[in-house]
Image 1 (cartoon, rainbow, N blue to C red):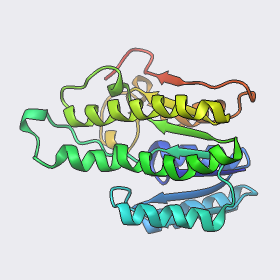
Image 2 (image 1 turned 135 degrees about the horizontal axis):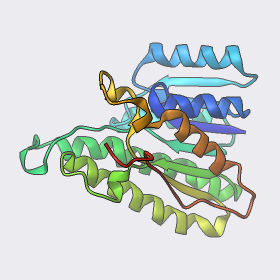
Image 3 (image 1 turned 90 degrees about the vertical axis):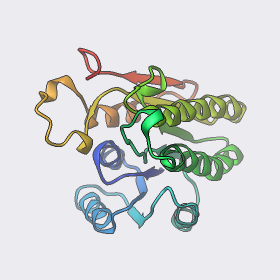
Image 4 (image 1 turned 180 degrees about the vertical axis):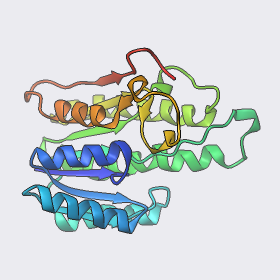
Length: 232
C-alpha cells in the first residue's frame, strides 16, 4: 500500500507519516525543507519495514507541485492514499491584511490539494479504489475573524472535499475531510497554555488511520476533532 502526504515533516503531517508507516504504508512525502525530509525518511527506514521517498517542494509553486506529482509516479505505480495536509496559517483580519494574503494562502491551502486530487484522483477512478483525505480546519465550519482569509481558504477546501466525495462515489473512491480544532503543533510554540487544552497531532494521525482502515463499504465523510473544553 502506498500513501502520499504533503507538508509531511512537521506537526500533523509528520504524525500522519509515522502512523501510516507503522501501519505498513510506503510513503512519498514533500515539504519545503530538504534536511527535514531526509531526516524523516531515515527515521522511517530505521523503524519500519517500508519505503519512504521525499522531495523538497513548495506547494504554493505550481511547477514544483507538478514535479512532485511526477516524482510520486516514478516511485509508485499506484497511490492508495492521498493526504493533502500542507497548509499556511496567517492571522489577519480581512480588511487589514496585505493585498496578496488571500491569494498566497489559496495557493497552498486549496490549489495544491485541488491539483494533487485531480492527478491522483484520476488514477484512483481508473483503479476503482483509493482514498483522498483533506486536512481542513474547524475554521471551515465556524469563521475565525482573526484569520479571515485563512478561514475563506478552509471553507473552500471543505467545499472541494464535498464535491470530490460525490464525484468519486460511483467509482468506489473514498474522500474524507478531517476537521481539527486547536491542535498543538509548531504554530503554538512558546505558548503557556497547558497541552491538555489542545488536540494532539497524534490524535489527527490516529483519526486518519481509522478512516483508511474502515470496511470497503464505509466512508467517513467529515470528522471533527476538537479540544474537549472547546477552541482556544
